[in-house]
Length: 222
Image (cartoon, rainbow, N blue to C red; front, top):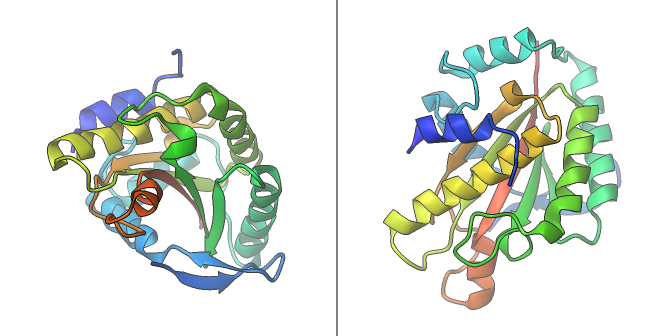
């Protein structure tokens, strides 16, 4: 992966098959994207794509976040903090086609590219700016979370096309959030190409679901 490019882009302000779990706030049964969290965990372990932190690894990232003045959570405060953040995200993003799901203490935002990016493009559709503005506002209100941004593609085209495109889409999302005040040290950026589909690539509908950017919010814990 082009880590140096990821680091640089995420630091620049923008100028231009799943399981289910129960929402602890609403009691609603929602999709639980455990596969995405496994991928993010593996990427974090490898030290890939950190936006500003050159000390690779989860502890290094934590040090960078704490150094930026962001407090860590402990005990029952973790779940309560994430519950409140999830409730606000679900309320603000209702009707936007962005899904908000929960896996333990992690919150996953699934942003399909048909509402965020044009076909083959990494430029965010201007009509999606208000949605990202709402996301950034809530992220700024709840700073004690890591923000892991991972781009995905469908299987159309080669890896040589899909992997850079998925990375660039993740970077565009990260850069926009940074431009709206989200602290850079919180960000992790990566692209997975077509390797992690959540639907069949045999149909147009499935491919549309697979072209996406996922943002996973994880609590910064003591």
